[in-house]
Length: 291
Image (cartoon, rainbow, N blue to C red; front, side, top):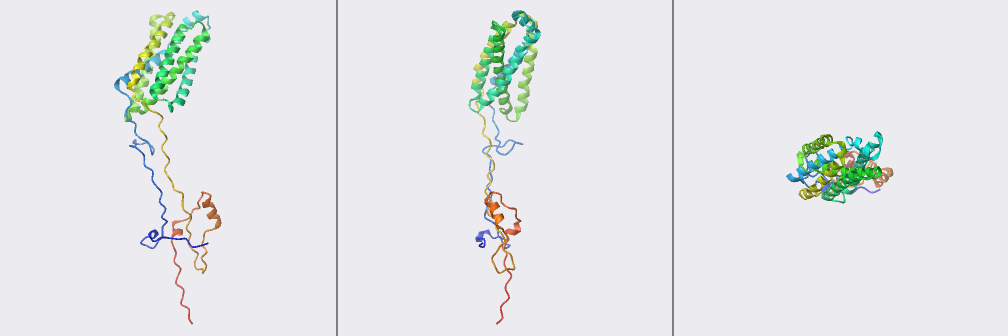
């Protein structure tokens, strides 16, 4: 095995040789968010004031709609001849659709903009609420509740995601404010049923279906974002072959490296060696031969 080659620039002032390999450092492509990982870029605001108000009103609607099913059970039993447990399936169908909506719209988020996702979600919830109010039999009413739940899940997912990233450092506070309006709706729904009577639940479902439509006009005020690509991993260069010091005193140029370590390096798993092993060692001067 030959002696490793060195260039003059690889030698330090103290006579120690260093390999020319340097590891490149990856830099993020934008302003880094405080406390975030490498490659994280701060997101700017994507909402206007009117869009914030419309989004909060949308959360009032989804909170109130899911709270209408329970107080309507007496009227549902009378209209469809149901038992108490069967009448409660309307709420179950609604939340089953909510889970499906979150999963479905999460799959579509990387391919579709926010405006389109929210528009489809508002339309689905409006169609489902109207269908539940006008359903002639219980199976169709359950199907309509499932459809309304899918829209419910899309609104919940889309707005929560936008509020979580759309206000910079104020995103956490704005996300809490948004979800507080869901609680407002959850209080408002049963109160309205109590005010008008359970037998008038179709009118309330229709009213909430129509209330979704004006929110479509406010979607233009919100920004359109797509799923951000994951930041690239820091670039790491392949380590160079191990430089080994010759074994002295010896008259042969054999080194302390073995073929096993060379093979391990070639397989992508370089062996561990100390920095001192990379130093170029000068042999001691040979005594002058006497005649």
